[in-house]
Length: 386
Image 1 (cartoon, rainbow, N blue to C red):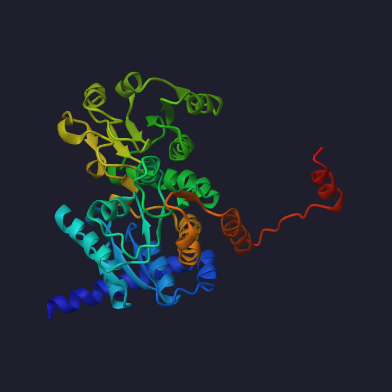
Image 2 (cartoon, rainbow, N blue to C red):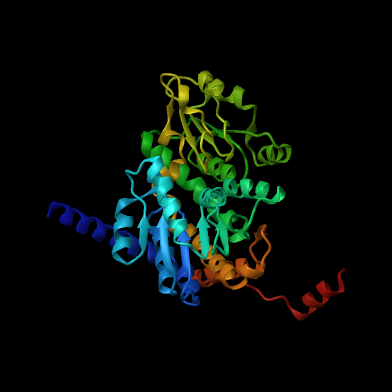
């Protein structure tokens, strides 16, 4: 009886939070209303929380049989309970062990999804390793760190399915990576620690789109931001955008807060950690396993969320309005793979430009923002190629 009461309470709170998120996701609602996925099975491997739950429900409403799995550290039990009550197959628990997480992913693959929507390419790579590719038309990958190994596999001739690079859609990386991850990671670190940023030295390792967002939000809250990089053009861009650029080992001793935003393992090493002052806090933005080497953290230094992506493992993820864009791209990617995937080569493919632009236009329409139309004279000028 107590278990039933608890389950009912979880479902009710989950439904309420999913409905709240849906109020601020007009683009996904518009896109989903035009999809027909009848008879298809879609596997979702995304952070399991109210925003992504709306993608699962949108695909279900379009006729798909939806199966969701997610690592324990990124699973919200209220959302999972609400989705299960809505008829979505949920293979995820917040208290699952790594072995159980892997078993959940294998169970999803054995149900032979037509399309996978992956995060970090964890399940796409597992499908290849375990020979569970039968019936899989293709996959969509939404992260920089997930696309990197898939492109290596493609170069080696090891990739057996087409993958749509959702992360490389402008409607995704220009907003999700910069504004979404930037805001959510900075705010998650502050919520977890109770610290303020004004007057603090914040070191951002990596100045890709995620690092740019973290640096901007930290500076906006009053931090003195130091950027570190291995790539010359990224370092030069950080310099021209007003940030101090230094070597990571030189910057760590005066840092109050350090963000690793590279998506590359062993970015923050034991050597870096040993140079930090007592009270320093380290967080991962974006994130892959072992991006921070957590095995020997010095006393007084805190690594948030055990080195996992701080905004997903220890907070609510990216803002709803931002995820509306990213999840809409995912929905269109699923539809594109179902329609065109059988004719696509096993490779990493960019999202078709017209689909990417469609998301941007739908968002502008929802905001009530108009666009100018080029005049006849402007079009003629452009067509002359002058």
